[in-house]
Image 1 (cartoon, rainbow, N blue to C red):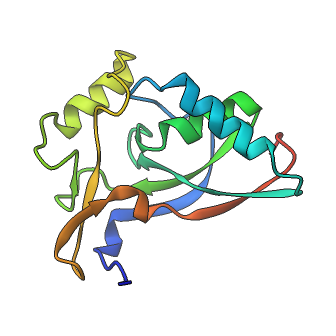
Image 2: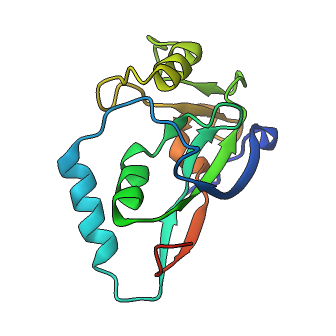
Length: 150
């Protein structure tokens, strides 16, 4: 096991954000979201631990976590845990080949012209591994109240 080191300046904040503020750029796979809903609802605890959604700090377009976002929204959460990222950073890529640009992703989200599910696989550069790693590793764990009306 190794630790992941990266340019910390790409994280602009971690907080709860209204579901109405967050913008998707990809469609979801309904069965995957439904399984996630069942998983979340299977807990009998007052609190649920979940990885935050990763969003662009300027546009609030989701970079990673469309299914988590959809599941929490469908369950009834009014605010969702988000890690805000400097999406313009050269330390973030849309995938290994970068077939689609960051600007195109933002435009798809803002225009509501959603891409097919899993169209992007965002990565960030890790200075410790000297590799491009899955961006979900930048997600923060968040404790949500069992009450959906945060």
